[in-house]
Length: 286
Image 1 (cartoon, one colour):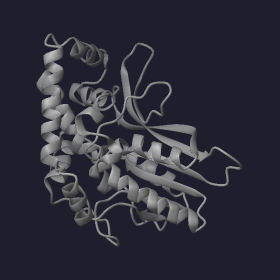
Image 2: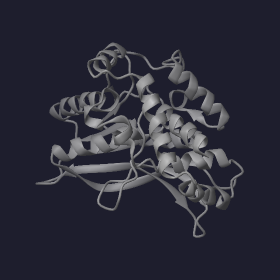
Image 3: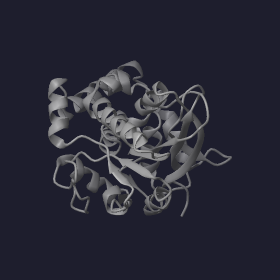
Image 4: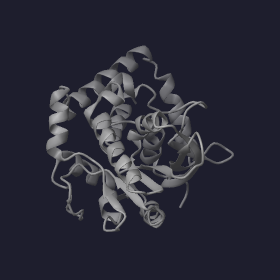
């Protein structure tokens, strides 16, 4: 079971921009959850759209954090496409030079994208770049180029290789603290309760929302290149759009980026006002 958990964490790195979700307590904003029925059976992996407004004064503008997962149900991406038309500006993540035209071949050449496509097929899901319509006129690129990201990672002595080993050794340390695998039994019980035949998908869904120690594994989000530097660029573009007069703005980024983006919006004087949950994976019976 410990190896299944390790594999699941590698999956997390591939599906949420090399960072896990934060399993928040009641005092924090929650960006992902597994919806269960009255008997505790998993029904869906849900991602949040959280609306932020100014804490002081009239709410003359709002910013939505639209949590993304790069592998999901086709219906999930269809709903997002519909919602995106409501924004004056939709800021999106894509490690690419400014002006890049997003097509089905975009970002399909690297190891990470190849692994994502493999997992897409294994889980019978859809790939984000195939389903999201990036041709909408309100879409605004708000990310680093590959050269900028590489330089930022080099400045911090970071790489995907080091991320892999951080997760590996952290998982081994957790196993040494729980050699009987008692924490894994909780996950097994949840999978047994599920009506779905796809136990791997259910296991991954729970793991995606239960990695409390990710900052210990990967380091402080705000200091990292893969999260902090890219989020900093997103906030820079947000300020540009606000200065240009936009009042209804969405930030469409991988869900692993959201806790740090949440902190940055709070620093701007914004507070959560509403949360909408969207089913990203169907986990119940067909």
